[in-house]
Length: 466
Image 1 (cartoon, rainbow, N blue to C red):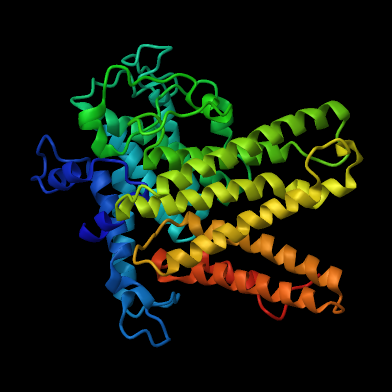
Image 2 (cartoon, rainbow, N blue to C red):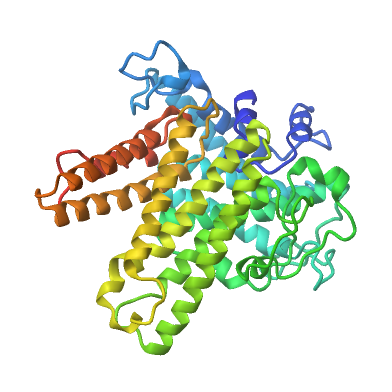
C-alpha cells in the first residue's frame, strides 16, 4: 500500500488519498471500507511497483534503485506467480463491483477499472488495457458524470440510459465525495484521450461524440474541494470553451488552473490535434482545404496559449507530486503540437489545394521539431530529478518524439549527402537528442514497462535509412 500511495497520482488515482488510506484499513464488512475490487487492484499495482520486485540490471548500479536499468528477466519466479495471483484476484473482484450494494460502487468501479487498465498497459497487454479503460469510460458517461454541476441540467438527475444498474446516484455526502465524482470523470477522459492515440493512433471518439455535452466544471485538486466547493462552482460547454480559446481566469480555484485541470486540458488538445490532422489528405477540395486551414490555425493558437499558461503554473513551485504531473502535462502539450503539424510538414508540399495556406510546410516542420526539442530538454531535466513517474503513456510519447527525430535525421542526410560539414554537425545534434529520448524511455523512473522497451528496436546508430 505504501508503495502504491507514493505513485498514486501518476497512476490515475483520483480519490482522496488520506480518506482512502484510512478506509482501506477498516475491518472487512465495515460500512466505510472500499469495494474489494478496488482494494485488490491497488494491492496489485503496489506489488508491481515495489522496488524489490523491479527487474534487476546486469549493469553495475551501486545498489541504487533509482539507477537500476530495465531488464526483462526476473530473479525470482515465485514473484511472477505471486503477481499472477494478485492479477487474477483483481480481475474477479473488479468484475463484481457494480453488482454490489456499496454506496460508492460507481466511483470505485471507475477507479478500479482505470487502475487495472493502467497495470495492463504497463505490462504491454494493450488489448486488455483498452477493454478495462473502455469499461471505466462507459460507467462514467452512463452515470452522467459529464453533467455534474451543469448549468444546463439538474445535477442530481444522474439517470443512466445505457446501464440499467445505474438508476440514481445517491447525493454526495460531503464536498470531497462530490469532488471525487468530478475528478473521476476528468481523469477517465484524460486517460481515454491519451490511450486512444497510443493504442489506436486515432482521436478519442468519445470526446468527439460528447464534446458539446460536457458541462462538468474543470476539476480542482482533490484536497481543495473541502473549502472551495461553492454554489457558483458550475459548468457549461466546458470543453468547447477551451477549444474556442475562452480565457480562463487565473488564480481562481475551480476555474481550470489546478494541476489536474491542466493535465486534462493538455490531453483534450492532444486528441483534438489528432482530429484536425486526420482531416488533412492529399487532393483536398478548396472548401475542405479552407475549413482545414481555419481549424488548424485556431487550434494551433489555442495550444500555444495553453503552453504559456503551463509555464506560469510551473513557476508557482508546487509540491513534488504536482511537479510530476506538470512534467507529464508539458510533454503532452508539446506532443499536441507534433501531432497537429506532422502531416502538414510531411505532405503539404505536394498538395496544390493548400497554396493559400498561411503557414508553409517548412514552418510546420520547424514547429514540430521545436516541440520535439522541448520534450528532449524537459526529459533531460526530469532525468536529474528524484521524482519517479510510472505512467506507461510516457513510453508511447517518447516513441512518437523519436519518430520525428529519425525523420529529421533522414532529411538531413538526404539534403547533405555527405557534402556539408554543417549537415554532419546537425545530424550529431539530432542523434544526441534521439539518444536522450530513448534513454528516458529506459530509465527506471518509469519502472519496468515493456511498452517503453519496445522503443529500442526502432533505432540503432547503424540502421537509420533514408
